[in-house]
Image (cartoon, rainbow, N blue to C red; front, side, top):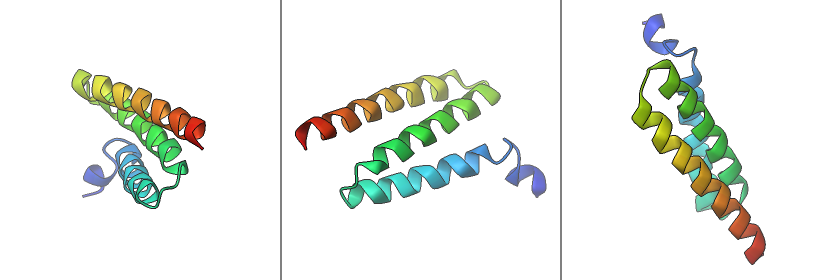
Length: 78
């Protein structure tokens, strides 16, 4: 059981929690959600590298860039 919990050094659990909390913050119209989401995307990229999943690395790199763009645009609109 411990292997399942710590298979990726618990980075997967951290990424999951960051993603959930980021979506919660964005739902509450908090710009900080984008920062948490980008941090979560970084964690997912690490997991993709550890698991040799190019699709996960590419997808989360694109998501990270899109979240950075949204964070910048939100600032410009404020």
